[in-house]
Image (tube, rainbow, N blue to C red; front, top):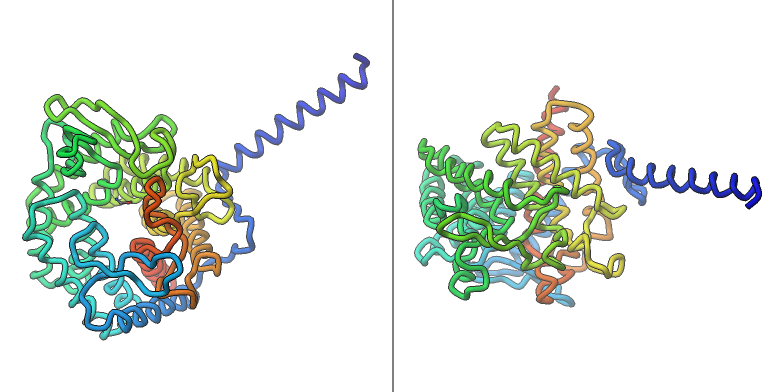
Length: 420
Ligand code: GLY
């Protein structure tokens, strides 16, 4: 080989190393690059416009629901109106929650009356045997927001009953809540299972401790969060979906997925629940361990995002980029990162999380993800359970819930900043 060829190879190697370094550095750089042109900061007027868009959609849905007291869950492909369900399933509380947030963002009293009406439809769930950990999702989104905004003690009393029911699923030997009792009976995930989504339901326990002044609820929540840090998070800060534990020894005996692409893949909404859950745990306890965990989970999520900040349903689906997105995961993370940014005292991370959340919200508010005049939802392109081909690439109610929650959070942040 002559000298010229050797120099060329040498230069080529340097170029390859430098490009790899740049690509890696971008993952950890505080500058979050979106490939489309959505780069501007949100101002109050933008946020209010987005909230007003949600209000108009909400009024449209109320009109289409008529006298029905069923709660919207999905808009099936090709349809324009929500398919609504009797209270019972894990998504039951989100419609009432949306109404509370729209009321908070607009002060529309008609929407408040509807929020009160739909919140009441949730209560009968407490008369049935406890079916799952989802009591947190169901009651915190409905009664939790009702209590937060009205301070009405009747709402608090229901929250405490719901939390009492949730505590019946806590297993002391494992230190976590049993997420799916039905999957113990079916022996699919027996004898004790905990899913990462369960992190979201701990908020109901913290609320119950606040209401009752009794620490037993938050003690359980802390135990669940600690055991989940130990077993549910991989060395690269991504999360498993389902863990199966021995109910007597507490040993973790299986790690797998139920809604993700593969057992060891990164299911986007699972990662989103974890980010939101640990941010909330830090808010409730002030424990730095939860803060660090939320940040590590966030770094693992952000570095996997596509250019428009809305994840594919599973980051490891081999069909990417010809696969479906999950706008619900983007909405959950946007809301969580606004909170994480508020809790973070230090720059540049504080601005980094805010910037990421704002970009997610711009993307979700763009024609690519907004339903606009297509149907009654706020957002398109959420994915519930891809492996089972259920609720794929359609509007789903929890995406709208976390989207409006994030917008209302951002509005409050901007108002506070404006007030100086
Ligand atoms: N279990 C809640 C979810 O599907 O993310």
